Image 1 (cartoon, rainbow, N blue to C red):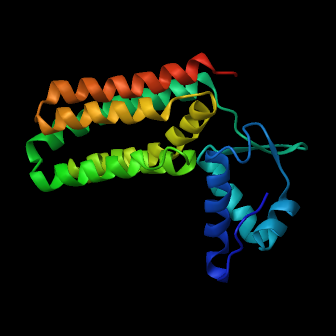
Image 2: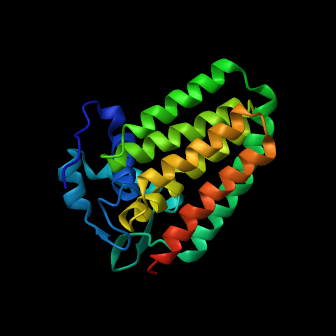
Length: 217
């Protein structure tokens, strides 16, 4: 596995944290895998001290777990975890739509359509597609003008993406996801809260269904 090497000492811990978390989210390191500190230290080009600090932060956030006398392991994706995240995502994205529609103007609609166009151009790159999709949803949250709601959705996004990469590996169609976004945009352009929230919930429910059909715990 190839990691970028940090160039500034003060960034070593943050660099290690970001690199390892990204590798976990993108399933470059599979759930349940054991981490080797010496190998990580060499790959990242850092000493064990900032690496340990990065691993401590990852464990606090629920990405890894330390097992006494056995080692450090990537957490597995459990059915309960997936259900919790999807429930939170649905509740909060519905609130986003309710808050943003009264605030929508033509400039915001144009930006939303621009983000959707960027998404349509990433179908050959699953990694970029997922991150563009996240940008689309985070921009909607930003338009709600509720900072705490935006921060909550932002914090959920990493775990949501972890599951979504698993969903894409299970065969989720990118064309289908793009079409679901089109329905959301049509609801936004009509300034119709019910139509848009129905489209958002359908989008999330389909992602959940696809993941659960192929779920192996």
